[in-house]
Length: 132
Image 1 (cartoon, rainbow, N blue to C red):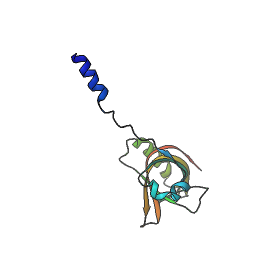
Image 2 (cartoon, one colour):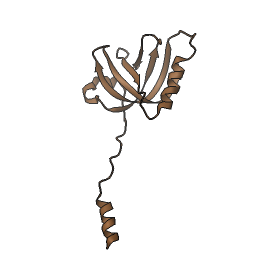
Image 3 (cartoon, one colour):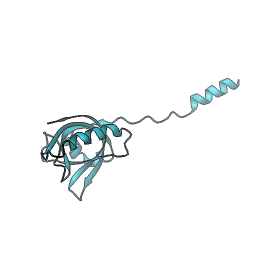
Image 4 (cartoon, one colour):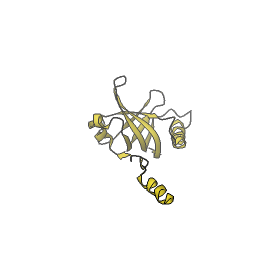
């Protein structure tokens, strides 16, 4: 009888919450649905551009006037993907050319920043990238 009570207790115990999947979204849709997307975890593809002095921007060909400010999450569990991407962006210190990368990443949309006039994206994993 004790075994049945134990098994019944296991069956009635609450199941652990499953992680919500990342939403796959275009930067254009993210921009137009900004309020609804604040704080959401997303997967996106974009063009990452930086001159290594004045910051970086994420853009998409479908909405070239929209720019997002990317930030790498230094506390992310998959820090290795961020480190590899950052090393590729930094590249040769003597090369002062504009850096352009096609990037697919996982991130959290942090909303619009009145400070720099850009939407902020906190990247926690770089899935793939290629220098353009």
